Image (tube, rainbow, N blue to C red; front, side, top):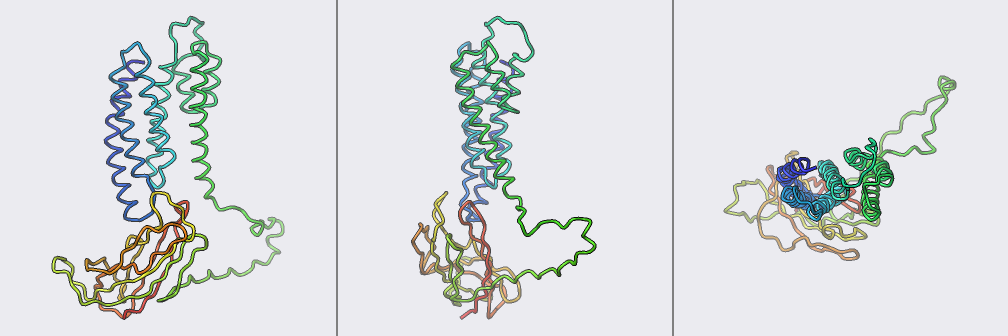
Length: 344
């Protein structure tokens, strides 16, 4: 296993740099979207664990003691745990977590496998096969662990707990993916083919129009949050250091309340990251740097943020703007809404 640990260690150190760059990009996206996800931070943790495990694995590859090997395995398991649970919208992190999981299996088997124990060389008792089974299908790997005489009882118990928990985490992630499939309801029962020609098909109902909210109207997502735009006011103030030359500068004033959004990375926080402002000619507006009297604040459950403001520079002079809003609630579910706001 010395060569395998050397190769894995080098790959880990190189891979950690790539994962770190990806994680920084994911963190920036999360911040801009205001999604509250922590996949960027989780990726940084995975990268740190990979480089530490790689260094330890390479440095101790020739050691007859097992401490270094098991330490590297521990860091690989931490990387797999962080990545598998917190990957969120950083989907590549699921793959890197599986890679860390595979590396951990190699080091754990090497740490606990006793080459000095004599027994017949049966193919199902070889280290490579046990390692492969633990990576691909842990239940089979656990069975091979227990029928092998090359492992003591304590390592068998430790390995069983580690790989059983890891397997449950993998199943949980897969369950989360497949649970997004649209369920079949009683109203969607299929008509038998034999009677299909004799059955009149009802006309398709038009999709209901989405409500467009106005100034002072409250958009409420039950059990999640409520948002109200209270003003869209023109200002004559201009920033001499800004490269923008807007036809108008509009300050949006709004209030929001946290009805039940639980804290993940941060409390409920609704800001310009959640808004897309469109002027009367259909051109996107950009945020504009002027002084406002109120800032959005992290708001815990049961509290309100009142008087928050965001300024936007309009390319075209308009009497009305459209604000498309997207706010993330519990479980990172996205809720969209549209507002038509007259400018005063």
